[in-house]
Length: 204
Image 1 (tube, rainbow, N blue to C red):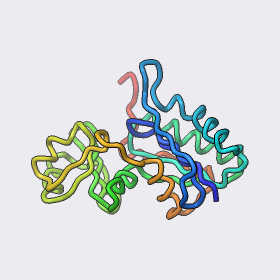
Image 2 (image 1 turned 30 degrees about the horizontal axis):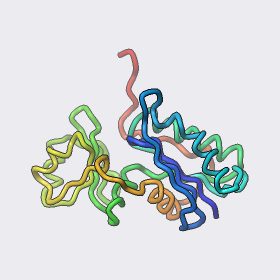
Image 3 (image 1 turned 180 degrees about the vertical axis):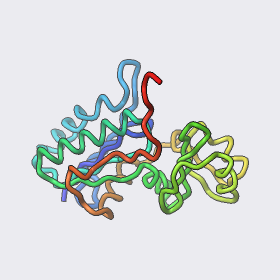
């Protein structure tokens, strides 16, 4: 089974083409001065398929990050996943960015991401939601934690070990593809963004 997996929710775009658990091609895209990284999603998918002498019709399943993360990034990858799955008449799988991050060091680690408004998204073997930072300070005591740059100093004061996913080079696309094999496939209509907190209302 050939799986096309992609993520534009976090600080980079990750795209991986795999066959079952074997990675065929994987690319990471950074933002530049002209475009946010998600702007390159479709063109890079086309490029990867061409390099592997494949067409979209050769894909058996779409896997995508459904959030939390950048609202623009979530909308981009979920929309592309839904459109591709619909047009190709194949199944789709959604995986939370929190679960992906919990596996970047090879185990199911505690993940704490900045959710703004004095809260953090928390994953500890399951999504715990958006939790007040004061409660997070207690939760991380003595734990190994995956976080982002904005919270790393705060968490370092209490955790036994802390890693910012933004400071390392981790195989996020490959992890997303691997986790998709453990999820139940779904119809594209049921693939929806994971908004733990409501999207911002612009102009207010």
